[in-house]
Each structure stands twice: as structure tokens, then as C-alpha cells.
Image (cartoon, rainbow, N blue to C red; front, side, top):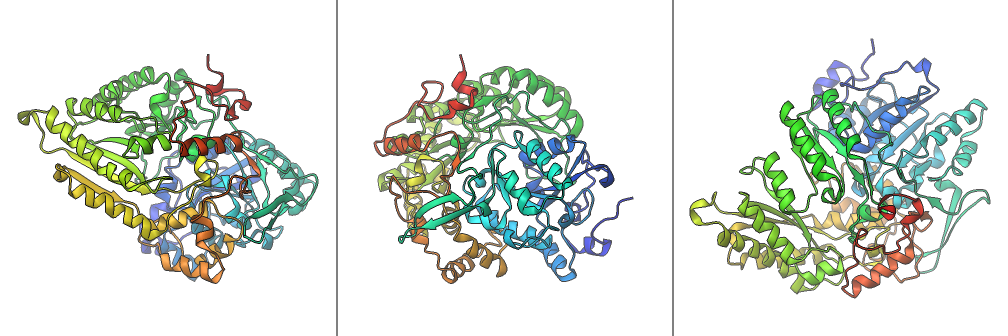
Length: 620
């Protein structure tokens, strides 16, 4: 009988004790005596969000398929338990064994969002693992990072022993085999890390040194030993159909943010939006075979009892076998009374037809992401949507019975003018007017509701906009006010709503996204002064970050408020993501010329991703 790490008394004191007890349906418990390698995969956020993350479910399944390895899960304790664990000196534990994770071989942390960086420090601290990699001993687990934020790992490099760059299904077996062999031979931590640095896709920060110019930019970034690779190559699963995928995902005890079966239909995207990091780093676009997807859907629904299935993809409408898959799911799910969720569809006749079959139209709203209000701005960002596409889709939706539309935009994009800002509510007004023109009064289901949401633009590494400048907090709020004031002046303003993202969080996200190793001191300062759950507005404290930057001599303007010169060395330039810097620079110039680049199915633009030997680059 396994003993819980937390006493009944403690569990009764915390909100949602089910976050911490493990033993969920489909979780995997092994005998520690039967395995050579023990590890925990961590999502540095609360259980409900971590349990919704597909990447961890895939890795958990993959690692546990190895007979010599037991992989557990761990999430960030909520602040109420954090306080108790610090007071009572309780070390953070794996959900499966309920044993301290400091006793394991590896702690893997998936890093999805910059504002979770302080939670990484929380996890290490509660686990009683030294925060800085240089302070760890032979008795501490090896701390590894993966996920989208590792495409610029430098701001958090001091806290990790190594990073895995790319898709986890590729090189982890080689990594674990190397570790197991060297551990059996009695190799030291330093020797193991140096050996792992030679495994493709592995970056060991301690084996590289950075020098800076007087202006604060990077002069040189290089390995400290000749046998350590100067470039780290992104790992890509070329054949999606044969990749590992969990037939029996773990089912959470409490309602997760995404409480459903997730079916990943493809990776990558053909579109080439210039602000979108995922669209660049996950190139080339690779599809999973429709027969495999049908089989997985049936197995996963049976193994979980979930009442909803969702398609996962950056742009579901671009999946070439979508119609066949969706029709299969409609039939299959009708039998089992399961709902279907179809995110990231373009609003066209086929999509609306499908949605009308799977949604309660009276309750649901349709989502468009025009990203910019004016055509000029949509050309700059390579959105490839015209106003006719948007109005045509909206009209089809209104005729289909919908009267609620959500529109997503970005403010602060490169070259944005006041005219572009005003174009956002003007477009929303045009859509509302179209509803009243299209639907006769007696057929209307009340007023239409058009909700505009704007996030503020953050330039990300490995995008054509990585050279762009950001604005400061007050400027972003000024732009949101222009949108809000313009909305109030529209004829159909009673049918319009407007929400905007927090400007102070955006500014910090920008610094962490394109920052360098100098930022780790500030991150440490924020955590030591009480900063956790910065991705949650109720815990976020802007002044705490400002104090940390001041104490650590961080100049925010250097990171955010300048256009980078074409030849600047970026902190992430040592990573090869397959898409070349030359292509990105060409796209940056094309953006400034307000010109659209055709998508990958229309024409190859020579981005470099063809080197992987599969996907859209090799269709037909």
C-alpha cells in the first residue's frame, strides 16, 4: 500500500487535495526495484493546466514503455500548499510514488510560457534541489528542459543541466541509454553531461561561454571544449503516423482546463504568419494518416470515458483528410454521446457545415483570428486573409444560425499606424452591420454580439519579427484606448465588445522571450522576493519585477525598445531549427515591403525545412 506524501491533516487544509494524491485512471506505477532509471516530468503550473498538456502525456507514455524506466508526473503546488511545504520542510514528490523527486535520476520540465519561469524555481526549491546548476552535486537529479521556450533557453540557462531542443519522440532513447551505461560505469555528473552534449538535440549550457560587446550585444557564443558541438540541431519526428502516442492517457481526478481526448492530426503549419513562432519552429508541416487517427480516437475514448474529443493542430482546416476524419468522428461520437471540439478551423462553407452538426448554435460563438484590422497590416504579417474572406465567412455563419462572433487581433505589430488600430473596431462594425442586413428582423435570435480581443505583439525568436522592436507599457495602453474609443463611435457599438491583454505582462514576456543569460539573476531575485504563478494575474506583481531589474542592472529598453540590426548575433543563434536565418531576414524585409509570401502548398519559399526529408516539402 503506497503511503501519501501529505497527511490527511494537510490535505484537509488545501484547496483541491486531489491535485496531490496521484493514482488516477491510466497512471502507471512500477516497482522501483525493477527499473534502472527514475524520472519525473514536470509542468510548472497548477495540476489542472499541466494535466491538459499533450506533450507530457506523450512523453509519459513513451518513457514508461521502456522496461528499464519509470516516469512520474509532478506539477507546481498551489500557493496554499507551497506555504505548508516550506514551513514543514516537506520535499516535493512525484504523484505516482509519492516519494521525493530529489531522489530520482532526472527531473524533466516542459516550458510552454515565459511567465512560468518563476514556477520552475518554485519546483526546484520545493524539491530541495539547488536552484543553480553549478551548485548541484552527484546526489542531485539531472534537470532537463524541453518545450517551445527552449528555442531561446538563455534567460533560464543557469538553472538547467541541459535542454532538449525539438520534438521528444526522437533522441530520448539515445540519451537514456547513454546515461544508463555511464552511470553503471561510475561516471561523474560532469562526464555524463559532456557525453550527453554530443547527442543530437541536446544543449548543455555549462559547456558554452558567451562574451559581450560594449553595447551589451553578444560578441561571441562558443563551446568551451573542441568536442562539444557549436550548433545544436532541432529534432523532428518526420513520420507522424508511426510516432508514439498515448492510447490510454491519464484521466485527471478533477476537471482539467482541457478535459477531453486530444487527437493530434498534424504538426507544423503551411501558412507562414510572420509573428508566429510555432509556425516556424514546427516546420515542415507533417500530417498523420487518417486511418491511424480513427483507430486512436476509438481507443482513447474507450480508455478514458471522456465526453469530448478535440483535434489538435495549428491550422486544422489545412489537414488534407479533414472531411473524412470529421465525418467518421461525427458518426462515432453520436453513438457514444461524445462532443466534438474543432479549434483552429477557417470559417468557410465546409467548416460551418461541420460545426452546425457538432455544436449547439444558440450557445456557441464562432472564432476568427484576422490578427489585424486593415488589409495593409494583414499583408505585413502575412496573414493571407482578405476582408472578403472575413465578411464572406461571417455572412455564411449568420445564415447558418450563429449570432456570436469572437475576433482576435494583435496591437503593436511592426509598422502599425493609428489607421490600422482604428481598422479593428471598424471591421467589427462592418461584421455587425452585415448581420442586420443579412438576417430579417423576425428571424433574428436577439442582437448579434461581436467580441474583439487584442493581445499586444511580442516578437519571438525564430520568426521574421525577431528583429522588431516592442513598445512600452503606456504606449500599448494608449493604443488599446484608441481601439476602445473608436469602437464607441461605431454605428453598431451596442453589438460590439472589446477586451485587451495586460500590457505590463506583455512587456516582461518580451524581455524573457529574447533575453540572454544576464536575466537569470533577475529571475532569481523575483523568486526570492515571493514571485510565483506570474502567469496568473492575481499573483503577478509588476513592481517586484521592476525592483529585480533595477537591482540586477537590467535595461528593459535594451531588450525591448530597439530594432535589431540585420547582423546582430542573437542569444539563440546556436540552435539550428531547419528554417534559416537568411530566410527569416528575407521575410522581415518582405514584411516591411507589405508583401505576402504564398503558403507552402502554393509555392516553396526555400526556408530550409526541406532538409528533414518529409512533410509538405515532399507532397506530390
